Amino acid sequence: MKVFVAGATGAIGRQLVPRLVAAGHEVVAMTRDAAKQDALRGLGARPVVADALHAEQVAEAVGTAQPDVVVHQLTSIGPMDLRHFDRAFAMTNRLRTEGTDHLLSAAQAAGVGRFVAQSFFAAYERTGGPVKTEDDSFGPGPAKEMRETVAAIRHVEESVLAARWTEGIVLRYGGFYGPGTSLGPDGEQTEAVRRRRFPVVGDGGGVWSFVHIGDAADATVAAVERGRRGVYNIVDDEPAQVAEWLPALARTLGAKQPMHVPQVVGRLLTGEVGSVMMTELRGASNAKARRELGWVPAHPSWRQGFAELVA
Image (cartoon, rainbow, N blue to C red):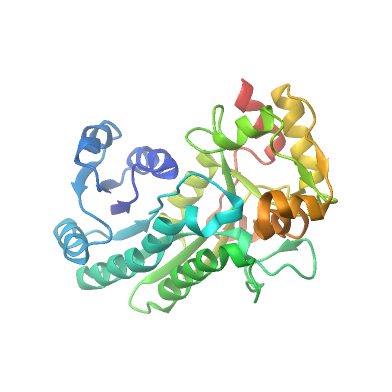
């Protein structure tokens, strides 16, 4: 198949493109930066330069490529500040709203048969059990500082699933870790743990679901090849509370154990978003992706995956 990848130079795009090529697909890789074309050729793709926020450029790129599948991995995340979460995701939110609309319009005009888009697990409702499935809804009241981000995620999902002219597939990825991510060997979050600047807030009862960036790319290839309309959680097998995984990560990195701060102090330090993620977040189940995509993560647990950060 011919696969058009938007966001081909991001953390997951750099993992995804060579896997698609290795699987025998012809890959057209979109980048906004002309200087990155050689890197994409090196991954085995045919590069095309277009600004995802420019409708005419996207329409020309997709129309010229005439792909069978479009994969939407567009993100542009600024320096992370949990107190101003939406500010850090401002450009990504535009890519998830305007960029999604432009890609869908171009894909419809080109008669694309399958459209795969990136989403995120952390918007699930924060009530009920600790682990959510694709049938569970997003919470009605996201933290104040991430309302725009959750609204943008909703836009991606609702727009893709409403596109009845194509096989619309949404992948709710877990928290990425591994090469090229903020939780990579030299990533922003990893360094914060090493420097003891990533505390456990309150009881640390928030449940996180992770996925190694390579496993996320493998799951995306599976969705490209055999995904059916709907939503898939792309996470590992072991959702875990912050109070469990964060100290374990510190031990793996050879760092001092993280500080514990009361929730009221944590809220002052990290805002409502940080407090919610540390104490109320719900994890996700990968049972549907295993069953319907035939995907099995090579890193079934963050425990093995985190060990690679220091290998």
